[in-house]
Each structure stands twice: as C-alpha cells, then as structure tokens.
Image (tube, rainbow, N blue to C red; front, side):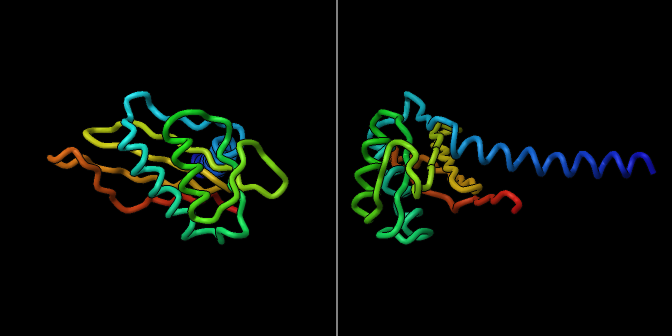
Length: 145
C-alpha cells in the first residue's frame, strides 16, 4: 500500500515539474542556436518555424515575443514571421506570446525545439547525401491544464 501511495506521489510531482519546465523555457529561458548551425540551415528552420506558427495562430491578430537573442536564425525568423503577418517584439508585452527555441545539431541533422504557452514542439531535420535538410513530422507536447 505504501508503494502505491509513493508511486502516485511521484507521478503527480512529475506532472507538476513538466508544467514548470514548459513555463520556464517559454517565459524566462533564452533561445539558443548552436554555433555550428549554418546560415542555410538557419534559413530553412526559421521559415519552417514561421509556417508552423501561422498554422496554429491567427497571424494578423497575434504578436510573438521572440526574446532578445541575436544571430542569423533570429533575424531570419523575425523576417519570416513578419512575412506571415505576425507582429514581432523582442521583449514581453501585454498580449504577446513568448516563443523560445533551441536549435542544435543531432546525429547528422538538426534538432529544433520551440516552446510557447505550455506547449513544446520538436522537429528533427535529417541531412541527405546532398547536404540538404529534410524535415520529419512534428512532436507536440502540451502541459496538463
């Protein structure tokens, strides 16, 4: 009986820590792009991120807070979001949605993670023999409400 109660306690605390992780990454965290991500890869990833967000939010009515990160992916992402019709800010405003991302190399490809409003979206881009990236499907995790 004690074991069952203990297991329930750990399960519930795990859910709470997952919620805290999502909120932390999406509001306080800094976005990160590994230094060995090329400009060409950054362009592909940024365009894809903007397309994903435009499928999930009404662009003309949404402002995205991309944070104050600098770098090639950030500038391309801001440009792509603007082209999709989003308002873009670099610090939290009253109605903006905080977006944080992490882009890093992973086994002959690129792994992208985005976090916003308690949701984490991941996508892996494998590198073909020609050096180009091809995207896999999205993995979406939402924190319990």
